[in-house]
Structures are given as C-alpha cells and as structure tokens.
Image (cartoon, rainbow, N blue to C red):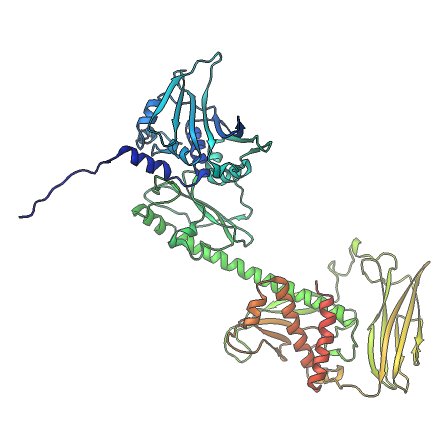
Length: 598
C-alpha cells in the first residue's frame, strides 16, 4: 500500500528568497516609480526627485511631505507582508502597494538606501539598508526644527544608470502614474542638478480626438475604465493597461490575445484601467493570466467591435479625402501643363472657356468595367462658372496691379495655311486674372504670318504657306507697368492627326474637361489602368503591385497616379499615332504636368 504524505510549502533559505525578490525588478525607472507611489500612498501633496552628485558619488533622492512611517522595524522585517494590504481590507482606498517589496527594488538602482521619516508620533527615524546585505539599521534622528514627511536617498547609483536623466524620469512618470497624478493632484518636481535643469511631471496628454458613445464595459469583478482617442496614424500610438491609475503594460499588444485588430491599430491611443487584474509581484509590469484576466477579455469584446467600426470609417474617410486631394492636384497640374501645350492637339483635355473646375462630385459605381467585382467611389470633376460667393467676388479675390502676361497656349504646332485662336491673360502677383484696366498689342517678333485684331484680348493667327518657327509676342500695359508674353508657334506641313481632336472628340462622344478616376481591386492582373469612355473616368487597379508599392509614400502615390493619367490621356487623345509618337506625347505631357505637381 502506497503512503501519502502532505505538508506545507516553506522557504528553505530566507535570504536567498529576499535576494531573488530584490533583483526581480529589472527596470530602474519602474523602481523610481515605486518610491514615488509610496509617497502618494502616504498622502503626500508635493514630491521632489533630486538627481545629483556628492563627493564624487551620484545619488537619487525622493523627498515628500506625506504622513511618514512610524515603524521602520516592521517595514524591514515584514517583506512580502505589506501593511497596505491590511489597510485595503479595512476599506481604505487610494493605496496602490500590496506586496511589501517596493523598497527592495533599490538594489537595481544603487548600493545603499537611507530613509529618514517622521511618523504620526512626531518621532524622526533613519533606516539604512545596503545592497546584498541581510542587516538593516534604524536610528533616532534629533533635529532643532520639526520635520515632516519622508526623505529617501540611494547612493552611489549603479554604473549603468548614472546617465539616467531627469527628462527620462519625467517622461516615464508622466505615463506610468498618469491617472494617479490626475486623481490625487500630487505635484511632482524633478531637480537634475548634474545637468542644471528642473522638470515638472505633468500627466501625459493624448493628442487625438476623444471617442464618445462607445459601449460601456462592465464586469462583476470590478471597474474597467477606458479613455481612448482616435489620432493620426503613428506607430507610437498605443493603448496602455493600467491598474488603479498606475500603468502596468505600456502597450496592450504585448498581450497575445490583443495583438490584432483593433487593438494594434496605429489610429488608437489611450488607456484601459482594470481594477481587478492580478499583477506579477516581482516586477509589477505584467499580469497573471487567471480567471480575472479571462473576465477582462470577455468584458471588452463589445468595445473591440465598436472600435473596429470606427477605424474602418476613419480609413474610408481618409481614402475619400485622399482621392479628392489627388484628383484636385492632378487636375491643377494638368491645367498648368495645358498652358504650354498646343490646344488643338490636346483639345480632348480642353475645358470650356470662362468655366473652371470648382466642384468635386462623388458618385458610386456598383460594378467594375466588365460587370464583375465592386469598384470604389468615382470622383468626377464638374464645371462651374460661379465663384464661391454665387457670382460676387470676395474682397481677397479682387485682382491687384498687373504683374505678368501669359499667352494661351504658350506653345503651338499648326499646319501651313491654317488659323488658330489665341488669348492673352493678364495676372496680378497672386496669379489672379485682371478683367479690365489694361491695353494689349500683339505682334510677330520673328517669322511670318498674320494677326487679326492685334489690340484685342483674343486674336486669330494665320499661319504662312511655308513651314517655320514663329515667335508671337504680346505687350500688356497698365499705367506705367508693362509686361510681355510669348508664344512659340511651329508651322509644319505634316502633322500627326489626332483622333481625339476637337471635331473627333465631339463625334465620338468624348467629354470635355479632365476625367475623374476610380479604383478597382484586381490583384494578379497585369493592367494598371484603363479608360472608361462611357463614364469618362480612369479606372485604376489598386491591387497591382506597383500601386501597393506607390501607396506607401504619399508623394510617390501622387506621381504614380499622375503617370497613369498621362498614359490614358495620350492613348485616347492620339488613337492613330504610332508607338514612337505615343511615347513622345507621353513624355511631353508628363514633363509639363509633373513640373506643376504640388
């Protein structure tokens, strides 16, 4: 018959156990936070942390005006049996410590700890402990003046943390004790005497938009408080796990269960304060995965679903805004490029005179070009001949004095014995167009040809019967100010016949103005973009590897979409051109467009 024996666990070597506990705190900043929390638990209103050097040794000092300690002997001989735990059981709140091992963490900061404190009895005592030494010493301190609070000094500091600056301590405590500082109103000051700087520890402020209307998080085990913000995406954005105002885990994603959406989203930052989690006693920067943790995981599930929906809405809003911005920038760049390009050869791009693109309308397409698969919203440029005030210009829209004169187009290719219309635009320094108050005179500076109405804003230029290069100029005068514009006209007897010319464009049903664009996700397919003639839009394959690569950088994405616009506009505008001619046109349009891309 087998014998059964029972017994109780006990520590075989008390000093060995104490040593293990003392070295279990691996973060000196966390140890300093422990000292500060002891002061907060003692109802201190002011805490000063001093970092300095005395007789060649660096030291760290924590001074408070709290209630002090009455019995140093109890503190030194009851490691692991904190009196604070007993006070909590009696219903006293606002106390964080519960393990009775906080002072031992000085082993990870320096060699010797000296603590002077005046308790409720008015007696001032000094406690001295030395690293790797079992003994402690208490002595009574006599002073001419009554003292209050506690002064803790650690010296000399360990070589590895001598460079621990006051600024680093400030930043750590601002996050670590964020809510405790908020709730208690304690004032924490840091004096870094080695660098002659001082700091005030302010609770960390989040920069995003506080999320309201989230579902309440309830647990039968205790309170779960959350404060979450929607911010600009950044890898620095994290959600910290706190307990009773003290940070336990800097990022919730370090917990495997929460290392996924929405908790790892770069859009979210904030805190989750869980009052009933059980902490790892040694380091107090980890949690125990017990029933309390499982209850926490279950309780925050509805919150996770709501956060996922908010993040998706934010992403879609940003994509919509980005699409509008991209279309606006490309449209503006193409319009600027169009000033330098022959209008007759790019007539498909032309915008009707006296009208400008000013509205972006959003439409929704249900299927792709081939009828399969969804596509994203389409952004189509509309035309409007009204200014933002409904026809009345705002004060800042009134043009100033003459500053420049521009001929549109600034470059032109035309056939022999043909005629083309040109115009001059007078602008002020802010590029606003002048409507009146100036005179115009056109003339041919070099070459042959004829001009109709040389004193008019609009002229018709008649090309000569022989090919050549003509330099056409215009002088615009306003009072004493005089500006000159120039247009280079190339006259040839052979032209690439643009199938997308003005007449062809009208006959084929092509739209005036620049097209909009939309996305269609077609991963694995080779095409990057295609033009939909019926809807006058460019469909971009956002599943293509090139698009995915370009999207990683905003400027790269803008240039990539501009190149696709260039490709589609040239293909449609010159359907009968050879491959070589298409490439030349693409380089031409892309060069002038990217020059004006902002």
